Amino acid sequence: MKRSKRTCEWPAGDTLMVKYHDAEWGVPVHNDRTHFEYLLLDTMQAGLSWRTILHKRENFRKAFDRFDFRRISRYGRKDVQRLLRDAGIIRNRLKILSAIENAKRFLEIRKEFGTFDRYIWQFVGGKPIRHRFRSLKELPDRTKESDAMSANLKKRGFRFVGSTICYAYMQGAGMVNDHVVGCFRNRGPSR
Image (tube, rainbow, N blue to C red):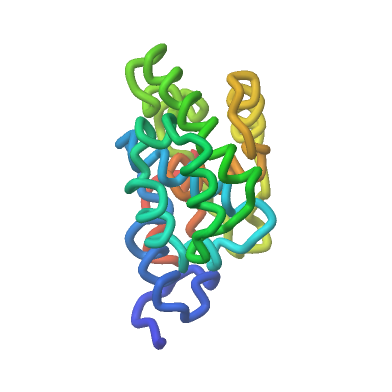
C-alpha cells in the first residue's frame, strides 16, 4: 500500500494498521466505553503483537458485548467457558478473568470519580503529552506517568496492567501522542 502522506513506519502497509494509525492512535479518548475497550484490548495484548489484537478486534467486540463494562462485570462461569471456546479471540483464561475483574474495578472508579475518564487523565495532568521523537527506536516502553498509572490501577485491583501495557494504552487513548516527527499526525506543541 503506497502512502501519499509522510507517516510512522509501524503500520508497515497492513491496511487495518494503517487505518488505526491514521484515525485512532494518539487521538484523545474521553468516552468511558472506548476507554474500557482500549484497556481490555491492551491487556489482551500482553505478550502478543498489537497487529494480532487489532485483527481480532471485531471478534472481541462481539464476544465481550461491545465492551459494555457493566455487562462484563456480571459475567459468570458460563461466560468464561463461552469465551474460552471462542477461537476468534485470545483464549487465555487469566486474561479473560482479568477482563471481568477489571470491569468490576472500572465501575468502582466510575462510582468514585463520576467517570473513568476523569480518573485516568489525571496521570497526564488532563492534557495529552506530545513527544517529538524522530524514529520508532526512540519511543519508550514505559514512562513515569505509565508507572504511576500502573501502580494505582494495581492498588485498585486491576490485573494485566503493568507499566508497559499502561503506556500502550496511553498511546492508543491519546494521552500521549507518539507519532514521529514528520508524520502527518504529529502536529502541535510538545511538552
